[in-house]
Length: 188
Image 1 (cartoon, helix red, strand yellow):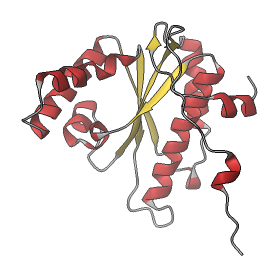
Image 2 (cartoon, rainbow, N blue to C red):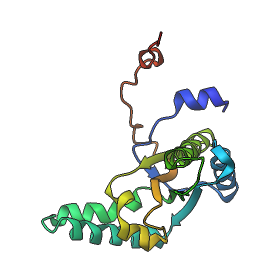
Image 3 (tube, rainbow, N blue to C red):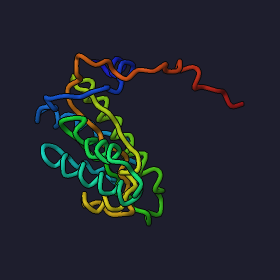
Image 4 (cartoon, one colour):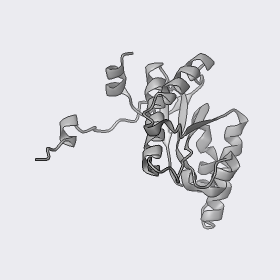
């Protein structure tokens, strides 16, 4: 798939199933992430893969963090939280390890570089025929989850990329996307 087709046809998958990307395809996906713009060549992006039973362990931790942050959470909400990492056979936590003391490159630029790496992951997965969901939420900002995953509290989880094969029985998540021109204004 050419780059423009990938950009214009990418959509978040409603449901992902096995198989996950092959090891060869994962190498391509990781290499694509490494090609993201990186002001100052600081290399802030780290990718943490989560698969197999590690997804269940993450789900239990997410449920525990929900209980800790919201003691009124009902059983259904707790069960839903525990199942989130099982939405796909393969997850990548996309992490920005920031140098907050850098004299030239502000933290926001380092985080944006990692965001671009996440987008490259989505586009590469799509171009290779896989589906991808980019999920964020409270889990990305939770110091307990960060500690469990070995991430420093000052670093950022830009998102969890859920990867797998698009379930052919489920439609992609689609919504009315704006025309590109509607995003544009002219400054004079």
